[in-house]
Length: 329
Length: 258
Ligand SMILES: Cc1cc2nc3c(=O)[nH]c(=O)nc-3n(C[C@H](O)[C@H](O)[C@H](O)COP(=O)(O)OP(=O)(O)OC[C@H]3O[C@@H](n4cnc5c(N)ncnc54)[C@H](O)[C@@H]3O)c2cc1C
Image (cartoon, each protein chain N blue to C red):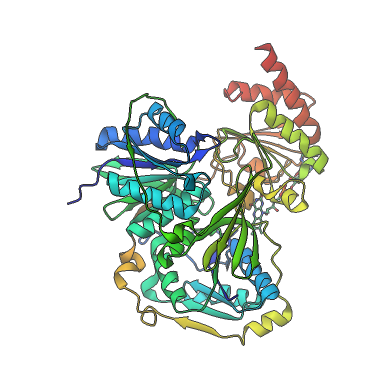
């Protein structure tokens, strides 16, 4: 009955590139359409789309819909929802994948509401079975894993960063330019200023390694040791809530139930007790290493490698050790 | 400035999770709390009211038990509460919830609608955007700062690198993050007073809800299975004997993580 086919990925431009999760979604979409059929389309909304179009092609998009307008220079929920909707109408996909970031959630929810479509969020798995898409998503901080499908013609989903692989498969995509008439309401929110306080920061949600510090680091001053370890590993920095509340670092760094959810390959917890609310944000990490001086700390109950000792001494020593190994190799 | 703040009751993170295998629904007969993110939304609403006047209404969809979440918002200082509660609503997904909240909000007076950025249980973070879309008003999500100047909002939306400042006229839907404020604890007076504040319970009929859009049958998504995963197991635990850093580095190298 439906003629929807293929997958449309809603691109998230980020620092002049496509966000990793967009590339991961394109890669996964390619694998799924190989079995289920239909094209992989990508929609790019930006002031200057060319570099994003090239990146989408590099990862194997068949078609790229372009909404090039100064209105899309900086993310605005309603503008990006209108742009994605225009591409959905043009592409008629069976599945729309948005990024599992604040921007992607807004776009996914807005489009799903307008389409009256099923909304699947924070996917950690997506399979095609007999022409249906089956999504896996963890909830309650990863303590319940749910398998879901959308019941209507088209489904809209957000994809958790760092769960699907990224693989280049260069293609020369068909580029289709879309003219979007933005509704008056969509342009009501105006951008006053873009403030970059942490230029060059490794994205916490997309990082393959996260080094996180907790109250066990002792002081805001000592927290720099965590940053230094992260730097030598090319990792993002995370924090427990207690030290955010203490004001050692800003809320942006908080991992956990009331902070960010991360699934890196490696999570190094330094002086973090491993409270359930912290675990909620990091227990889907592939490998967890914990440094804590209390052998009874809860974090050791789910860490793959636990080191009982003083984090204030061990963290800089580990930084040094890794630096040595890097320069030796 | 009249404000509607949407609140949800969630299962306490520390409560043990039990799934009903026939419906895949979570047993909610455990300790439930006001969604932690919603405390920031209620607090922000109260601060705006205190600075600019107006009324704050707390709006909730949930079982009868969710009255407690609304009462908590009232105890913090909200003026009135609305609980949309009906057997027919059980099993509603994010889309269904957004539809119901939007319908409930249409019957109320507000210039601004506030949400917590997500719930700690369903965790979709999608209801604010879907409600904004259904009401046809702008959405500003993930806010770390909200200022009101007359009928203009000036907000900071958190990004990885810092923030983006936006200006927007009311009405609008806003979602707020932790860090925007420090939620107050309800005072004894507040808790006593909350019992006398108006709290209206509305059912599907009172809101003339379209039955095909609500509950399990109206859901646009179907749960195929739900499981409680094996908890992560403890791995090795090593005592630092002075060579701890080398040992960690060796472990990382053996796992090809460095
Ligand atoms: C509603 C709610 C939401 C919450 N949300 C979050 C959230 O999103 N994220 C989050 O992290 N928490 C959250 N929490 C808080 C959580 O319950 C814990 O309080 C918090 O995670 C503890 O942080 P911590 O491990 O840094 O500090 P602590 O619990 O104080 O633990 C410090 C740890 O460091 C160890 N230590 C001390 N000195 C040293 C040393 N020299 N070397 C090595 N180890 C040392 C100690 O043994 C201890 O295990 C939330 C709580 C609630 C109620």
